[in-house]
Structure formats: C-alpha cells, structure tokens
Image 1: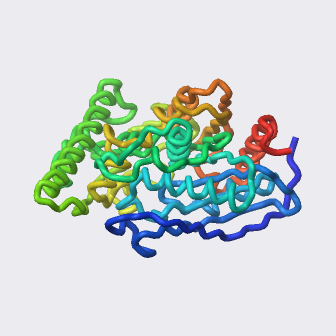
Image 2: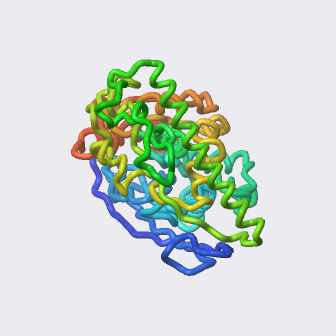
Length: 390
C-alpha cells in the first residue's frame, strides 16, 4: 500500500564541539573546534520520537533523492556532513565516527528525539556499523597510525536500529577491489604489467575473465595495497625517529578504478550496464581526479585505505551490533554489487535482520523517483514494524 505523501521542511543545523588537536586536517575552521553542517528534513504536521541520521565519510548527500523520499513518507531525517565534507585526502575514520556521535547526541539532547536509527548509505554503511559497534562494545583505542582519538573514551550513544541502503562493506575493502594492480612502480605509474591492465586492448586476458585470471588479479590488488602501506609506515617511522612526530607527507595514488566487474557483467551479476560504473566510464575514472584515494596523507591512508590496518570494517563491525538491521540492495546498482549487500546481511550479528531488493534501481536513484519512493516506503514499513514510527 502506498504511503501518504507529506510536504517537507528542510532546516539547516550547525553542530559545533571542541576537540584538542596539534594540527589542522581540514581547511575550514579553527584549530580545536569542529563544526558540522547538517540538514534536518521533516514531514510537516507529522511529529515523531524517532529520527534517522545519515552520514557519509566525505559528506555531500543532503540532496540525494532518498533523503527527501523518506521525509515525504513521514520519516524524520537528518543528513550530517562529517568534518571532511568534499575531500578524503586527510580523512581519519576514527574522527568521522566522533562526528557521527556528535550528531546523534545533538538530535537526542537538543532536539528531543527519544530514538535514533542510523541510515548507512553507500560508504555510510560501514561508517554506521563502525560507530554502532564502538557505541555498543568500544574497543578502538587509537588510529592505525597509533595516535588519538581513543574511541573508548567518547561515550558514544548507541543507536536503536540501523538501515544499510546501497552500502558497501568498507572503504578499504572496496577500494582494494577497485585498485589497478597493473601499476608496478608508484613513482612511475605508466610502468605497468600489460597482463594486469584490463584497459589495455592488447591484454590477452579479456572478458569474460577466467577464474584463474581473477584470482591473480585480486592477489595483485591486495599486494599493491600492502606495498603502499609499507611505504606509509616506513615514512612515519622515519619522521618519528627524527623527532618529527606530527610531520605529514602527501602523495598521489594513480589508477584506482579497475574492478573487473565493470567490464565483465557476469562477475557478481546484477542489472548494471557493462563498461560503466557509478562515476561514469571506468577507464576514464581510473585516471581522473575523482577516483578514490587519488590524493592521500600518511595517516589517512592507514585509517581509511589500508587493507590490513583500517578499523572501520563493515564486515567485522556488523558482527558486534545487537540492534535491528535492515539491508537494502538495488538490483541495477552501478556502484555496489550484490556480494557487498549479501556480505553485510550475513555479517550482522543480530538475528533481527532483513534483506530486501529494489528492482531496477541504480546506486543513487538518480532519475528514478519511483525507486526512491519504493525504497522509502520499504524503510517506513520496517521502521513501523519495529515501533520506530506510527
């Protein structure tokens, strides 16, 4: 049954809190203070004790179709940008979890909501799971670089439920699946292994790819990630040995969109178009500035991209949560393939979990208002059955 459609009200919110830091890792604002911009979207004349909160590590989702669609069906919704809105070059996932915690606290203590449901959209899925796992069972005492913050001291308020929508398993896992393993020299990225360059027309390995090639390709992706991690750790050790404990180093990671799934739709199949990804032509994105992790700092690499070191792992964190969970996949998703959706659902430790699919929907529901509405109504039904909305 279709839900009634409400008029909506959008209210900007500024969330400010103090945080000690020896250096700035974002351009705007003053040292020692964090300011988060949020959009509070509410249905007119539809009060609620529950609010859903969305955050992505790099923000920018306040006008995504799903946010308005949720409010239109009667769900009070907040999109909160992290301090790293629009850039991930110096992003520390542990600090993003603190940002999400500040928003949860703000909506409960200042705005009076009794219950909070986390909305994990895309990269916000593993973030929401990371936050919730640390709220329920805090364990992360430092970043992978061995520095503050200590999340066990944050007093995070646990959410009452979690919705994972078009979510991937983790930034570092997804990035490694997309990393181009043909690069064999980071300082000379045009020096490549032609048999691992899936965009090389002379590569003897062409779609549909053999299982043997895919095993080799994945192993080479992980190996490249680990080579960069060794470089990062050696650089940090060098600085610390010289007494420069806060020194940083910025570097470029070339060619980071080379997932064979984009070229071979028979791998982890869904209804996505071949030779396409959510950022456009993957061959172009592979070299373009918009690619993941294109520009990095040492500490940020370890926190969000290192295959072996990153803490915000959706698979591991999902195992620790005890609240009800809804997992929603889009069958024509050109960013997240079904394996991610199933892996998250399978990993949720709580037995009160559901998985649903929106047929024919793309990653963002761009140009698909009917799919956004369908997903919003699915979420409302789940929220209602769990007592979060009337």
